[in-house]
Amino acid sequence: MLSPEARIAAASQQVLVRLGSFTPSPSHPPRSPVPLSLAYMDIRPQLSRFSCTDATVTVIVGLFERAQWELQRSAQSIFKRTMLDVAVSSDGDDGVIDYDIMLRRRYISEYERAASELQRRLLDTVQTAAQVAAAVAVGDGGRGNFSAEVVAVLERA
Image 1 (cartoon, one colour):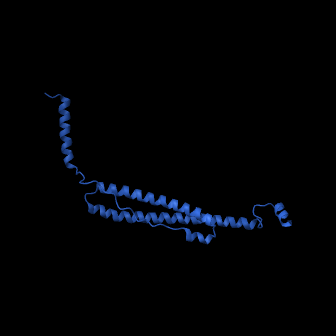
Image 2 (spheres, rainbow, N blue to C red):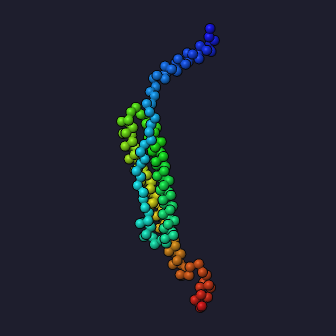
């Protein structure tokens, strides 16, 4: 004779087995989606209008490339996670393909918008810095960081 606890456990096990038959089991684990084709933006041509030194251009390009890489990495990661969630919750491949097309367009569009905004803001910052540098060069009478006394000594020499 079974104890009441054993009968409850056996009945619970039978219910769980029946419930398990109602939930579809995935026939295969979802496969990782094809990565997004994200365009690489080059900021060098726009920097040429500011007459930056080669060293300055190298630093600014490096900053932009790093930030752009982070945007790409983030977009790829979120897209992959979203598509894997869709694949797990979808009934078939047709639904996944439709979502893939729609989400792929959206993520590429959002990436391009974010990269363009990043580029615009960085170029605005460079332009502001160039204007400040030009104003300082004009405002100091061409003497750079030297005081008036040092300039006078240099001119007499």
